[in-house]
Amino acid sequence: MVILQEIIHYIYLIMSGFFGLLLVRALFKRTTRTNLVYDIVYAYAVIPFLLRALRIR
Amino acid sequence: MTLQTTYTLIAMVAVFVLCSWKLKSPEISMVITAIVGALVAGFGFPVRLLVEGTLTYLDLALLFITASLFMNFYSEIGATNALIRGMVKTFYDKKWLMLFLLAFVMLVPGAFTGAGSVSILVVGGLVATVLEFMGFPPERRAAFVFITAILSAAAPPINLWAMLMAAGANMPYVGFNKILFIPVILTTIFAVFFFGRGTKARPKSEVLANLPPAAKGMNWLRLSLPFVLLLLLIFMAQYQPFVIPVIGLPLTFMLCALLVILLDPEHRSLKRWWTVATNTIETVFPLVATLTSVGVLVNIMALTGVRGLIAINFVTLPIVWIYVTALLFCPLAQGSLSYGSAVILGVPIIFRFNSVGVNVTVVAAALSLMFPLGDCLPPSRIVGRLSIEKVGYKGSYMQFLKAVLVPWLFLAALALCMLIFTKTFVPLTK
Image (cartoon, rainbow over all chains, first blue to last red):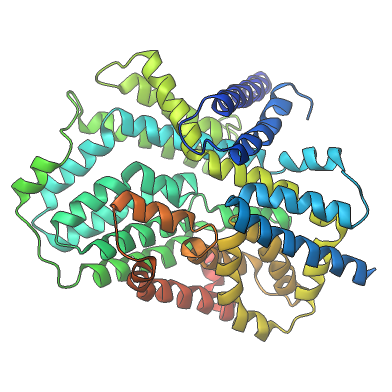
C-alpha cells in the first residue's frame, strides 16, 4: 500500500506537469480569449502547475 | 489599525470595480486588486505570497481539468449523442419523463465536475435542440439550460462553493451529499414543471433526423462502464478506505478518461485525443484561472488584514441581518468574484453561525445554493452568457432573466429556509 501511495504521488506530479505544459502551449497557441489580458492570465495560471511538477512547492 | 485596513479595503474594492469594467476579466482584476492591496497596505510587491496564493486551490483546479477531460472524452466517442438519441427514441412521446431525463443529463456533468459551464458545454447544445423540438420558446430554452446548469454545479458529489468554504473554515467536506441532493432535486422538479407547461412538441421523426447520428458500435456497455468505474472508485474510497489506496478525485477522473479511450468504438488516433485535451484546457481555463486568482486575492487579503476585517464585521453582525441580506450579497458577490465569493463572504458567515452553535454543514450547504444564483448577474455572468450562446438565444438579456426568475426564486427560498431553520435540516447531514 505504501508503494502504491508513492506511485500515486508521482502520478499526481506528472499530471501537474502535463497540464502545466498544456497551459504553456495554450499561452502561445489558442483560439479563444486571444487578447493580451489573457496572455497575462495564462502566464500566471501556469505557475502552480509547474511549481508542483518540479516539486518546488 | 482598523482605519488603515479599511482604507486598503476601499482601495481594493475601487480597483476591482475599475479593472472589471475596463479589462472585462474577473481573473486578472482579482490579481491586480491583490497587488494594489499589498501596495496600499505598505507591503510592497510580496512575490512569495503572490506565488504561494496561486497554489492555494491547485487541487481543485486539477479536479476541474480532469473531470472536464473525462466528460469531453466521453462526449468525443459519441456517447453523449447516443445517450440523448436513445432517450428521444424511447421517451420522446412521454413529455414529462423526457423533460426529467433531459434535466438529469444536464445535472450529471456539472455534478461530477462542480462547474455548471461544463454541463452547458458538453450537453447544453443537444438538450437545447431537443427542447426546441418539444416546443420551448427560445428564452425558456436558455432559462432551462441555465437553471439546470447552476443546479448541476450545486449538486453533490462536487459542490465547489461548499468545498471552498469547508477548506476556508477548516471543516471536512463531509455530510453534504443528502443536504445538497434534496434541494437540487426539488428545484429540478419545480423547474421542469414550470418550464414545461403549455408546450407542444413536434413529431419524433423530425427530432431524430436533426440529432447527430449515433456513433458506430456504441452500445449500453460502452455508455455505462465509465460511470460504473467512477461510482465504484468514489464509493470504494468512501466506504472501503482501507482496501484501496487514496486515489483522489483527479486521478479517479483520469482513470475513467483512460477507460473511455479504451472503449472508443472507432479507435481514434492519439493525435485526436491530444486535440480534445487541448480544447478542454481552453474551455476549462476560465475556471482554472479564477481559482488561481482567488487564491492570490485571498492570500493578500489575509496579509493586509482585509479578510479579518470582513470576518470581524460579519461575526459581530446580528444573525437576522444575515438572513435579510444573504440573498442579496451572495448572488452579487458570485457575479463579481465568481468562486472567490465562497471564500471571501461564505467563510466569515460560517464563522458567525459557528459562534452561536449552529450546524455549519447546513449553513455551508445553504450558502452554496445561494452563490450559484449570481451566475447570471454582472459583471461575470459566466453561466448566463454561456447558456444564451449555446442555445442561440438572440433576445434581450432582461427577457432571459425574466424567464429564469421563478425557479431562481424557488431555489433562493429553499436556501433561505435552510439557513433560517438549520435544526430541521441537520438530520440530512448524517
